[in-house]
Length: 242
Image 1 (cartoon, rainbow, N blue to C red):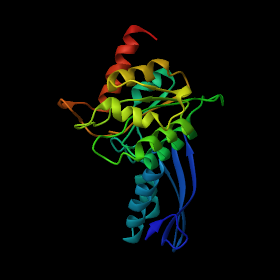
Image 2 (tube, rainbow, N blue to C red; image 1 turned 90 degrees about the vertical axis):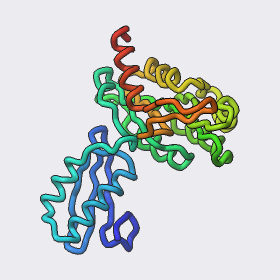
Image 3 (cartoon, rainbow, N blue to C red; image 1 turned 60 degrees about the horizontal axis):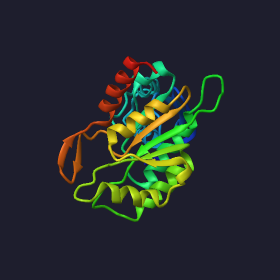
């Protein structure tokens, strides 16, 4: 078994997150292996630890395990960092978080890496929505989480399916701090607005759809890939000048 509980055969401990990645210790039968991965987020640490644990269990050399974990690539839609934002000094992250629990996890990681290299405080800006035809009780909970952990939130349309996107957004807004929350139902416009107000040291989180490439709306399905849209908008904004 592996995990962070005391009884795990391969136990995760001493997790440290920086802008460049995550370091953690993997305690096992024969000692402790210090590992570093470029990935961020508790779920990515768990995945990396799982892979490392399996490799160690079948006799793989610790050095080889360490090198493999250090070279792990990004998982699409799971705290996926968009490199193109780097030239502006802020971070953009695309994540599949679509529940209040998931949003809480990703925003806490974002808060941990926000800030400039000089130690200045960075803001967390969150673009998110709630899916239609799903658990309505989570909608105000998501709004509450975003208000607690983000400095600015833009509620937008996720996969509305047959529901009215405006109605869904208002139910999310019901749990929000209205002083730091606004609604923009057009997902592309909401992402653009977040990118336009972001400044050096900020982290923009685009949550809800992650790796998905289609948005399910009352009028039908339309192509929409958050990471691709972010890259397109960064190019447009860059061409016009910030």
